[in-house]
Length: 403
Image: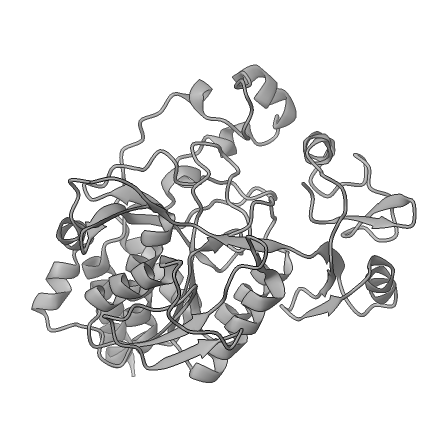
C-alpha cells in the first residue's frame, strides 16, 4: 500500500527516488516500513499518476512512463499513484447523546451569549450534497447533477454547520462516488472552486485508505490552499481506530486541521483514526463531538466531528485571515483529555490476530515512543471554541496596542 511504488515496464521504482528501484535500502521511510508497505501492496493498477511539486502544484498524467520522465527532466519533485476517497459516515441506532450537549462541551453556547453566530463567515462543504432544510449561498455540482441526493452524508454536514453558525454563508460543492469512491482529481477540482468563492474554511469529511506522508497530490494541494490562499481546510481523521497510523490523505497534510471524534461527554471514540503519519508527524490536530443525535438521526463518526471545527475555524480565519494561525490557535485553545489505554491493545494495522508490542517494536524501533504518544490519539485535545475566540481577540488587542 505504497502510493510511491510505481510500475514502469516490468519493474517497480520509487516515485520519490526516481530512477532508483523500489527496495528497502532506497525507501524514504526505512527498510522496516518498506517491508510492511510492500507486503500489503495490491499491485499498481492506477488509472492515472501525478507529477508533484512541493509548492503544491500537481499535474495529472495518464501513464507511469510519462510521469517518471517529467520528474527526470526536473518538471516535478516526485511521482504518486492516483488515489480515491470515501465519505466517512455512520448512521446507527439510537443514542442518548444529544447535539445540544455538544454545544456545551465545545462552548459554542458561550460564544452565542456574546452574539457570535457566524455573520460574515464564508464556509465551503465538499461532500455528496446539501440539506433541503438548511440554506446555502452557492451550490456547485462537479458532475452537473442534482445537488440534493439520496446518500445524505453531505446533508448532515450541512445541517450541523448551519445549526452551529446560522448566519454564516454556506457554499455546497458536490462530489459523487464513482464505483464506490471519489477520484482525487475531482476533489482537487472542488478545492479550486473554494479559491473563487473566497471562503474562510472548507469541510472535507473524506479519507483515503492509503498511508500517506502528506506529499500525495491532495495533501499538497491542501497545504497550498492553507499557505498561499489563506483558506483553513478541516479534514475528518477517519474511522480506522483503534489502529495507529490509520490517518491517510488528506488528513495527513501538514497544514490540514485534522479532526478526531469523541462523544458529547468528551470521551474519545474507539474508532477515531490515530497517527502518526507515514513520515512520523503527529495527527490528528484535535478532537470534537462526533457521536450524537441530530433531528432524530443517530450520527457516528469523524465526519460529524469535523463540522464543529470547521465552524470554529471560519470564525477565527474571518478575522485573522491566516489559515496557519487559525490552526495554531485551535491547538493552543484545546482542552486536554485524559489518556486511558493499554499499549498492547493498540494496533498498527488490521489483522485477524493482533501483533505483540515486541513485533511492533521490531518494525518501528525508531518510532515506538512516538507511535504511543497521546498526541497521535487526540492531538492537542478537545475543541474549545470560546477559548479560541478569546485568544484571537487578545492577539487583536495586543496588535492594536503596538500599532
